Image (cartoon, rainbow, N blue to C red; front, side, top):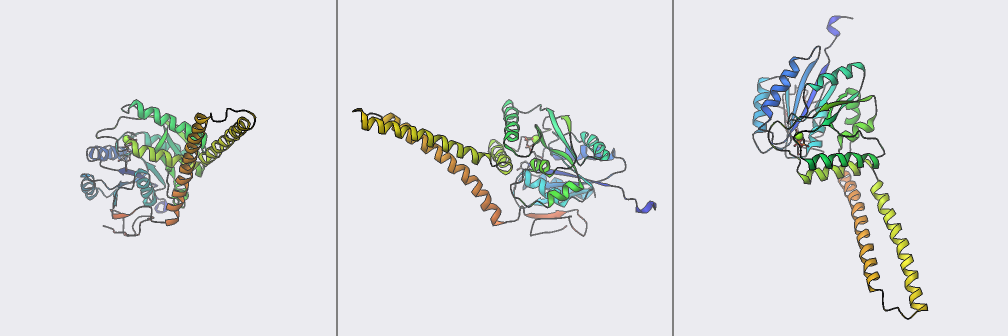
Length: 332
Ligand code: UDP
Ligand code: MG
């Protein structure tokens, strides 16, 4: 083959950032060190600023001005981690795409092992956390519980203790890009896609600096998204509860009728009545709530708004990013 036609493969690294001014400088340094160790592989570093209100965008701009491998996607507001990751994957033009957190909890050095697996022919190499230092016992316990519950509920097996830290081949990325859904639980979607996948155990580091950008509220939202977008079992559970109530109600009705017809004790039973009313009321509310969650999701799909709004793309070449779901596109 003509030597000129052999192109060095490109690796895209996607880094979502939300208020990471304390970390980002160090992250860029570590990623630079990582890039300089790569053999026969070009790199682009795609930072997605998820509407930070600290100095993260300014810092990113100054890094991008110095380094042509750095590209920026600046969101018009905070859209959340999973959407930020999606925008990065959309824009990536690499033969493989790596997702990595900005806080250096996922060590860039592990990516070398991911690349080795990719070169062996795997399409997805996902990092499985063997240790999670620096995270609260509460976070570790809820995360453990969540992944196990999700796996029991979901129709697709989703690997345990696995975050978004992973490498994906171009085939997987193109498939993800073709999935239009809004509730983007990226790690679940990647499992659903299939192809040749392999786990890579690694030790998760503590956050380099700053605080977790996942408060309890966001964690709950994330967990609900994961479960509801990969399972309709909550609906089945609410049907089951409804049936149970109906059965109990039938027994109660027969009992009340028997008392009324065959005894003279029929004024009693207020307690049973209250219990029945409250219990059935509770179950009904829960079931309607679960139904509401699904209907709400249908509503948001039907509105069909763009998934994210990009205020500015920086450092992409003339043709712009490979793909964008944002209507307003400004290249600089
Ligand atoms: N992040 C984001 N948007 C958000 C919240 C978080 O882009 O709304 C980014 C954050 O900057 C980090 C990654 O997502 O790079 C993971 O967040 P974090 O480290 O705070 O979560 P944790 O590791 O505590 O679960
Ligand atoms: Mg983190």
